[in-house]
Length: 133
Image 1 (cartoon, rainbow, N blue to C red):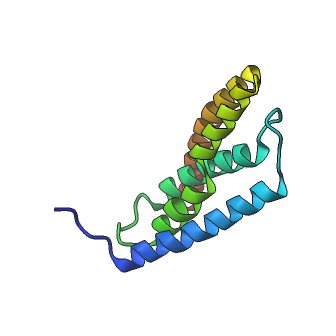
Image 2: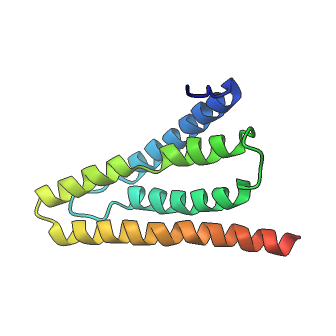
């Protein structure tokens, strides 16, 4: 049987999710782009989110699981701020419009830079923690 999540954890995820979604929508509406252009809003939020998730993972990995910092920040805010599905739709639209090179570059850059941003976030927090002791 699955263990139920406490209401505080679910509330933290819900609240963080609302914050992340509002930031995401605001950025997308503030910086529209054409199919033939680099999708900067999605790219920036995904890379920033990868960095933040890495940082938060390292920051909260030694904390008791009942705390709501991680669910609010990493699952809630970062989970809705970043968007895999929008990236997929942008790739689909690029390919449909014949922008194959742009789609390939966008996919490759998103995956590679996102991975390194995650690792950088972990490294920054690990270094910060190591120098603060």
